[in-house]
Length: 264
Image (tube, rainbow, N blue to C red; front, side):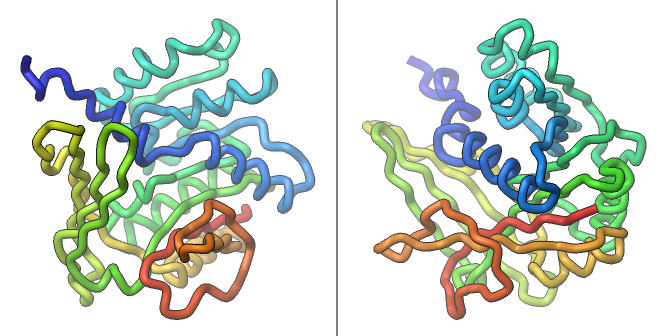
């Protein structure tokens, strides 16, 4: 058997990295807290397989989703594996656009979500500011921009973390870190039981933006306010998936994840 050919990297990414249900829950919560109503139109930037778009239209017959990405490969995968699971009505409420997220003429939305740290691909401040301005333009007077971000003392050097699932292990591998530029190289490896470890199935060359930088850029781009939602911890000290609005993060945390919400 050709193990490489039989390995579906997007399937394992979805199993180990993506949480479209949790992201959609958070988006609904943050929007209601900010606007006292439900959002209807979601734009998923850097959407890849657009699993969040599919989750969004599945939730309510009044919801619409727009996915934007430059790379046709993951979009084709999402069309075959995620969009295909929807009803005809749900499919009719999903629109996928192969385009650059920097395009200021992309469709408007109630919420723009740039998740899985995808915007870390913008290494220059001018580029990220341009993106935030494009988002602000598309959000009108009551929209929200939702980002996730990460940090912690573990970021300061190379490290690798393994997460064990039923039939495979997921590895998040940080190769290096430049404290002057905040640039780092990250890899995702997978190992199925009884097989060799598949190295660098996904690789990310990122600038890890800090929360103060992101909030300053949002303000400069015209957002009226930004809010930080910090993840709580379980009894073992790991993240519990519960995000609470806060202006004080956990001091000395080795690894943390947060959402940042910009209010147009």
